[in-house]
Picture 1 (tube, rainbow, N blue to C red):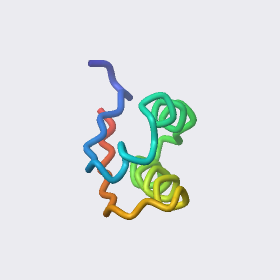
Picture 2 (cartoon, rainbow, N blue to C red):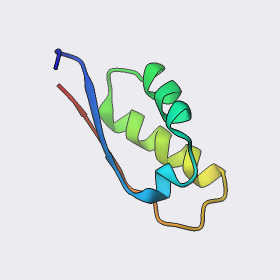
Picture 3 (cartoon, helix red, strand yellow):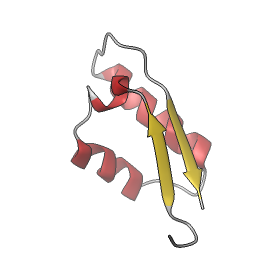
Amino acid sequence: RNRGDLIILCTDGLTGELADNEIQQQLAQATHDPEHTAQLLVRCAVDRGGNDNVSVVVLQL
């Protein structure tokens, strides 16, 4: 692991709406604010009309 790497913990509400490559794209564009990044991922899943709850935690090393 390197300084600045991101680790995400999420429910299937995120992975059910966004493909892995879409999540990777969002993370690649992420700011250095893990809270903002988590909110962005949740918003993307909700905007897709997901019916499942979505929880995301982003940790920056």
